[in-house]
Length: 452
Image (cartoon, rainbow, N blue to C red; front, side):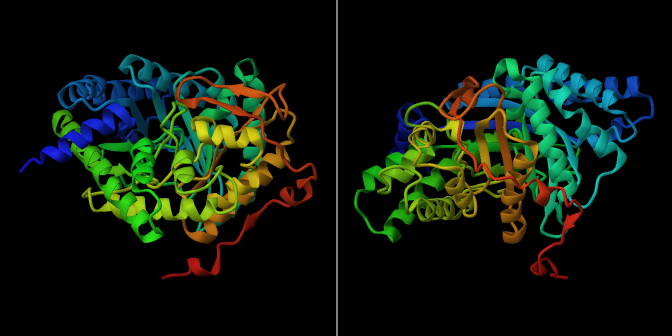
């Protein structure tokens, strides 16, 4: 039986507290497109994507109209392109990126993910060529997103790939320097990458997934912040219970949209990702949640503990609301996409070191962080290595999306626009880690990876 109070509360969440479906993402397998004819491969990929997802945007718009729930992004993810185009040169991969971009534009989706390589234990020729192509591919496309998995708990850390990704990020920043190095905002480096993540820039369609699938990402930082504020000065047990209850309600909305989109598109329902994804809009901030818990400013002492409570309660509440939960699931802390994080970083309360500590207890990693444009590639690799180590040792997904903003330094601001927001350039350590990064090879997997 429908509960009138619950209906009115959901309407309030949507109208006043920025509740939305952050993304409906269709995953599409491209394995049946593989051919040794490069031109034919491009055409088959374009045709498969535009045919499979031809109704994605229209169905999402119908659901918005039917239920009154905003669906902010409609996206597509595909099989890691390094596997599909394994025999191609870097130039050949750039042509595939352009085919993906054309398909995304034809469909009207916001982004297409899966320009990706999995190199946690070593790089095939195809993976190496794709990685080499990333700067040009991201500079010459608008909607293509790229990810590279450089580590896993089972394999350890491929430090050759970590070193290379520092160079790739640096080059991408230079090539897209006329737009505050925005190409780097479409590139993320992972440990333990999930196969069903609906969020960009890290979405890809994993090799264990069906031919096509619908994955949904929910979002409701404003709803959680409002609930905590209303709860007042309760103890931590009551605080966690408050977050669990509201996370359940948020996730039920995502479950509804996922099931409906799946039925109308005739595509299997995959997962709901529980992640609280902020935006630069007022009242849509994870930092505000933490500050409503009692922190004067996000980044001060106690921030990691507050985030740990939030992340755990979101998962506990959300997992009861959906048959299938996956992706990243928890709380995102992208600096440029969260007004409270931006303010805390601008004031210097939120530092790179504190963000790194916070990632040990939340779902992703160092996300959308602007750093000085003259940062050495080896320093970028060092940032990646530190963050990826947290994921490997703790058997969790972590990632790095840093943006060395060409021509700008500490105290200046990078403007990315839209949901990507804006960010202050954050300071880094001045001492070099180049000799460490240049050792190369692989950092072995941790002892607790031996679970067989």
